[in-house]
Length: 136
Image (cartoon, rainbow, N blue to C red):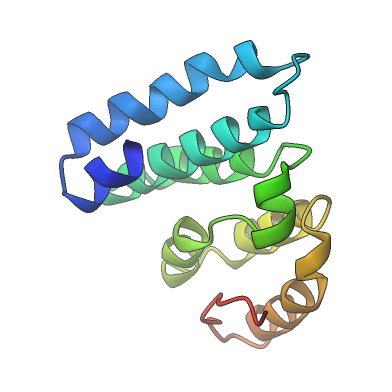
C-alpha cells in the first residue's frame, strides 16, 4: 500500500502505510512468518526515507536509509535485493559515504548481489552514479 500511494503521489497515505509497516514489524519477529520482519522494516524505512527526501529533510532520509539495511534479510530481499531508489536520491545529493555504508550493510543479506554491490561501490568511489539495476 505504501508503494501504491507513493506512486500515486499521495504522500500522506504513503507515510501512513510505511509507518504501519514499522508498527507491525514486531509482530513478525520470532514467529513462524518471522522472515517477513525484514520486509516490513526495509520497505517501511525506504518509503519514509523517500518521503523525507521529497520534503527536503536529508537527515531523516539518511536515518531511514541506515535503518532500511539493519535487517537480517528475508527470502525476497535475499534473492532480489533491497531497494536502491532512496540511495540513488541521496547519492545525487553528494552523500556518497552514506550510500557506501548502505551498500556494505546490504551485503550482509543480499548474497546474490555481491557482484553488483562490489561494482556499484567501485563506481561510487570513482565519482559515478550507478544505475542500480541487478544483472540477473
